[in-house]
Length: 322
Ligand SMILES: [Zn+2]
Image 1 (cartoon, rainbow, N blue to C red):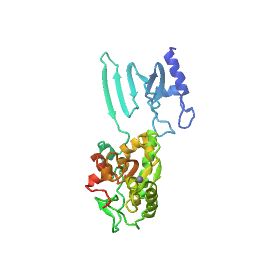
Image 2: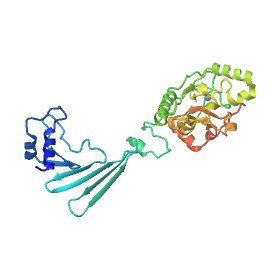
Image 3: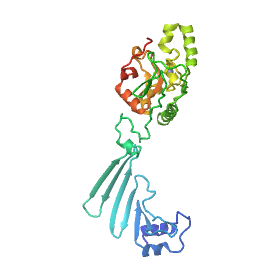
Image 4: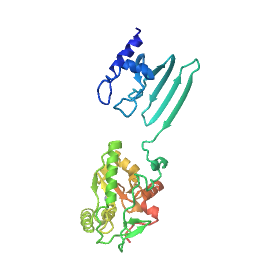
């Protein structure tokens, strides 16, 4: 008995049903190998004979290709014909390369198939170019917040405007917008999952009275001119809209951190914009705030972000106390 036949018989005898965990005693594996069409497969010179049958308790055929380790050469011996198949799986990012080589004759036939798949299989995401906003059927789509039909609130293209030129009624008290909250939470989770960055909710909705007290305290401490550069007067704060969130430390210690950089580059993907960018103080009316983001929904947030403009510039409005 040669070595290959001996190993073949040994492994055939050891074959068990993985579904029920029992050895199939109803039929000798050797007999099975003879009665049924069999494929003798050699794993690096170790032969395994697999009956091409369906186990009586199984509904799926036994396959010889499951559990094949990566970069394993499989040699299938059928009669005197030797077919060598080499499979290579490249996992980063999700590129699969398959190469089949047939060595039946002196002529070598080689075929190569390469496919690249993005991380998601959602059709809407597959069709979306980088940097373009998601469509409403895309899971990344973030809708615009609801609009209130209340006198004294200014909307432009569906976006509520709250700056030094456009105030809010003192009795407008909506609380933090729910969609804004949901999208913020999604962004926080993604920043941590994808980059290991920790974004934290610092401050959200502030009522007219809250802002009145905050602003007056700053005036008492720093004087009105200084206070106006970083704090809104009551009725003029974007925080009263329920669409603004301050993240992390809410001060300049946040500037230049990896979290601040990520926020500036990615918050539009969740429907937000960085509201008071650096170098735009005279346009927005406020100092650079790396921590203050404004929710718009992804239709507008992509448009504003891609324009490179502030919200004031994008809508052609100003921001100063008239
Ligand atoms: Zn803020």
